[in-house]
Length: 344
Image (cartoon, rainbow, N blue to C red; front, side):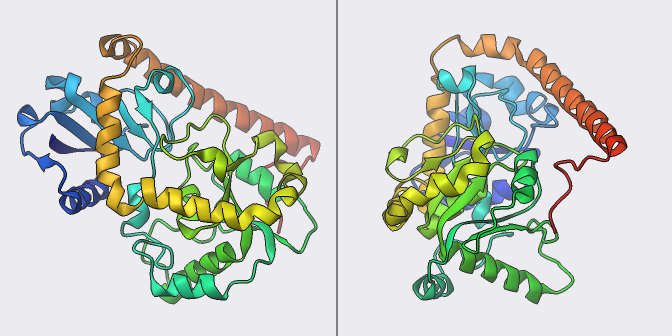
């Protein structure tokens, strides 16, 4: 298939996607959108819709434009692949699919977990003893995670750690050795866990989900409404826990400890078959092409609804911001502890 790649409000993803396309060799990249069978718009527009709607390629060739975006803010303005896809009309008719994060192996990768697997990860995995029933190390990027940090499981075999002081998406900390140390410890905890929690972050999707699969550890997905990518038989290895059930995690996971190793192995095999670096470009192109041929209403009807979708999303963000501010003020006046206060 002739593919035209174009940037849509983001830069590194374009470089990574071109690299994946070159490695794949299954498709031909063309320089003009007019010569392409599929225009793949790569980038970010969830908070800035004009990056997509005002793009010259989209304005001229909307019927062959599909997107790949890792936006946390899910705004399905065009058919394609959204890493934080939600259950809605677009996903139900096959206009939107979810997939893994290409940036997982970009410039901000964890050196101990990035593909291709390093000897260092093999060494960590081989020497690990499973001492945690489940673990989670991550930033405080959603209300769900804040609730998780405030839970007290009072168990030595559970590790829940707020790592908000470590900012993954930059490569110039005061001490680069500290970045490497923390990345190694993250990998060591992953290898020492029967299960790794994958709670939603700022978006419904999370890189940790695919990272855990690649490492061969059983993932526990906690993200209501997130749409799983097509391909794997998720029932074989994935445990999903509703967000309201997180206080029950020990009793929900303990019955599955004996099968955690098998679940981890199945997760790794599913990752290698569907989500590895070697699969990324071809899979994204295939999903984007399927999205353009979606069922249900014609794409023209979705385009007519774009502005309403944008205004509804902006309205919801304003309401959430206002409601949170009001609730926090009220709880402060009443002397109540709120979910945004972390355990120390």
